[in-house]
Amino acid sequence: QVQVVQSGTEVKMPGASVKVSCKTSGYTFTTYGISWVRQAPGQGLEWMGWISAYTGDTNLAQKIQGRVALTRDISTSTAYMELRSLRPDDTAFYYCVREAGDSTGYYFAYWGQGTLVSVSS
Amino acid sequence: QSVLTQPPSASGTPGQRVTISCSGSGSSIGSNPVNWYQQLPGAAPKLLIYTNIQRPSGVPDRFSGSKSGTSASLAISRLQSEDEADYYCAAWDDSLNGWVFGGGTKLTVL
Image (cartoon, rainbow over all chains, first blue to last red; front, side, top):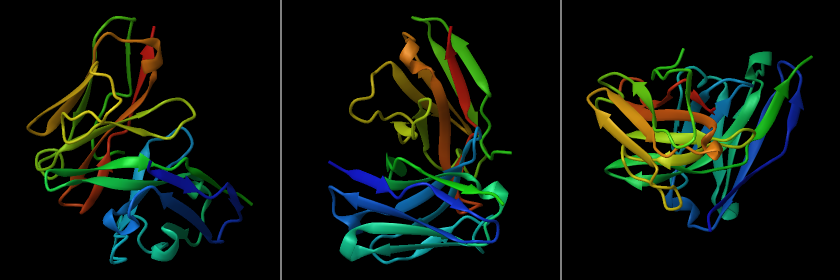
């Protein structure tokens, strides 16, 4: 079965960078894209961006595109999200999500368990 | 402020039917299918409804989705205590070239 397993909690100082990993299994990695979604404590969901596991092409949300990088390693079926110049309001759970769908529509089918990134001085 | 608009809260008693609305624009819901996600307390979100009306395997048929124009709705019939959760709608937005979410609706089972 499909599994999406993320790396553990990170505690960072303002201005630092963080890199979260997302290891997938149970399917052919290059067949589906991966999105990243974050959720600040007590708040709603915010889409950050998408990466094609096949080509490595990315589509990043305007709000964050200057500070985020999405990459993947086909050999280990792992996706990565790196966020730079961290600010306290970047404190959130970060979710890796495997997409599914076809020409009729796409959706976030499989969610990782979430990685808490806490930014504080 | 979220691009898609949902009521912040909804409630019902066991056995009742409740609906949660999701309002968007021509570039989001008006042009693309809507998906719904359920987030139980302390857990990651989970896919509940996709492409407007489809239920993934394992989701009870008490949950149903609909869409008309630039709005969508999630209906939960025969409400149960385990349905108490946050519910989010989502759609692709052609103008923003990205996914947008509703602000979430907290469902309370009284």
